[in-house]
Amino acid sequence: MSIEADTIARIDATLLPQLDRHHLRLLAHCLASFREMSPDVDRALPNVALRRQWCEQQPVVADDPQFLTLLLDQLNNAAQQLEEVADTCSKAPLDLSLDDLIAAAERRCRS
Image 1 (cartoon, one colour):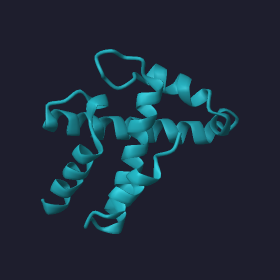
Image 2 (cartoon, helix red, strand yellow):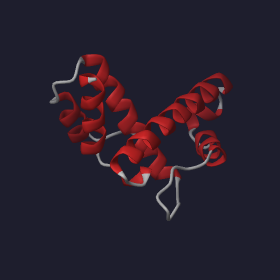
Image 3 (cartoon, helix red, strand yellow):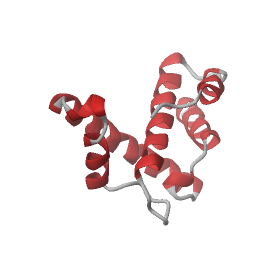
Image 4 (cartoon, helix red, strand yellow):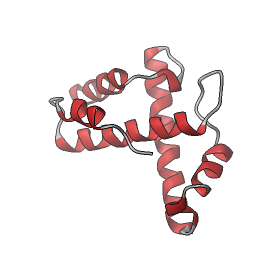
């Protein structure tokens, strides 16, 4: 799963510093991956077991246990960040928009 070119263009058009734009692209990518892996009707993020199952089905990840561990750690970190943004926005995590993620990154940079 990769994020779309228009998403990347919107992120790159922000006035955020380069590292923050990179972080935002990663977070948007994780959100898209969570949407792909979660059939959850309450729009919550997939649990750790679903994340692992999905990762193990990805050809690039399945044969590399070290990368699997690293990817799961990154997904867990992203999940925590998305939960925080969702709380701030009073939304379910999977209902977050790119605008929500950009606004949260801009708030973080201003503080």
